[in-house]
Image (cartoon, rainbow, N blue to C red):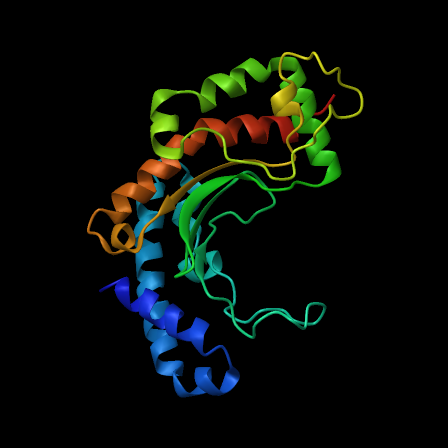
Length: 219
């Protein structure tokens, strides 16, 4: 089993993104996909010790279709240039692996949550943002992820209802709460890849738990 075959396939797909090419290389696609699904099965087994839900998740249910949905975005390529893994979907604080020749990463959290979810997270930060800072400034977290991820959509001013001098204003300005670690093709192909994934998941547990509690809190 070699993740290099995944990169080789995705690289060639990116350079020849058409139905005709895919039809001619369907066997390569299924081979690469099967390698990835086998990796996912091993990943899920590793993660069971942290979340019992992983034991009942099927590898095929953690990936998305390779076809892009071009109904409303006809300019998208016919096919995605990546394989991914998301065990619990993206509607709750999540864990995600993204494998692509254009850039691979391990990460999680909440990316651009809806207005109501963002409101709840900001309320939690206003109440105890110090706890989130403590989590994201832990040495093991910063060593793996470098801290909380960059947010290019961050507000330049304070959100409505919050003062500019709020001690957690930098967190309150955020629209995304993620942590990302870029990974190289060499790391993905390494025999230590599963260890790297498990470590990334483990480091996200307190971060995702904070966000989950904020989102699920009701007054």
